[in-house]
Length: 298
Image (cartoon, rainbow, N blue to C red):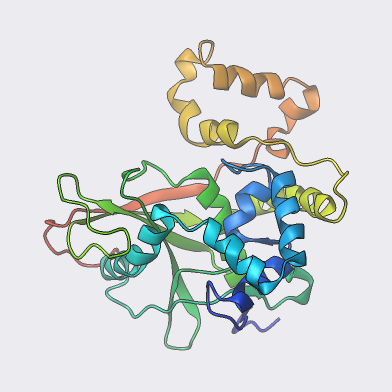
C-alpha cells in the first residue's frame, strides 16, 4: 500500500453507468454501511444483500432505471446544495482551501477492496495528501440535527478507513427559517444555515463494524445465512439519548429493551460486542446566513 496515497480512485463519474456498475461490484459502500451492519433506518442487511445481488445481475439500462427510482425531491435538493454547503464549510473550517470531489474510492490495500466510498469533498495539502474530508447533507424539512445521525457515523467510518483519515467533518445544511423555498433542483443562493460536526475515527467501532460486515458478506453469498440483527433505534438511543434519561430509564422502553438485550452475562460483561461502541464527535460550528464573518476553526 502506498503510504503517500492510501486509496485508489476508480474511473466513472458519480451517477454514471460505470460508477453504478463499480458500486454494485463492491460488497458494500459507505452509503450502505449502516444498513449492512444492521443499523440502517429503512432497510435490513438481508434486503441490502438481495438488492446487491440484483444489481450485479442487472443490465446497464436496469441499473440506471433502478437508480432513478431513488431520485426524489430530497436527493435532488441534496445534489443542488452539496457545493454551497462544501464551500461554506471550507470557508468556515479550512480558510477557504480549494476542495475536490472524488469518485468512488477503494483502499490501496488489495485485501480491503471489497468495500469503498465516494467522498463528497476533500482538501489536499501541498504534498498532495488528503488533509480533510467534508461530507455534505442537506434537507429542506429536517432542520439541523443536534448530533451526527447514526447512519452517517457508519458511513464516515468507512470513508475514513478508505482514505486513512483520523477524523473528518460532516456538514448539515438547511434553509433558514422563514425564507421562501426555491426549486428543489436549484441551490440556495442565500439563507443557507449550517451545522458542522467533527467525527474521529474509532478503531473500536471499526472493529465492531468488521465483525458485522463479515456476517453480511456471508449473507451476500448465501441467502440462507443468518443476518446481523437490526438495532438502529437502540443504537441511536444508546449513543445520543440514554445519558439524558438515566433517571427515568425504568419508564423508557428503549432503555428497558437495551437492558433486556444485555441480560446474558456474556453480553453484560462485553456490551460492545453486541452494541457498537459510541463514536467520538463534537460540534465545531453553527452558521447562520446573517452571522458576522469569522475566521476558520483553530
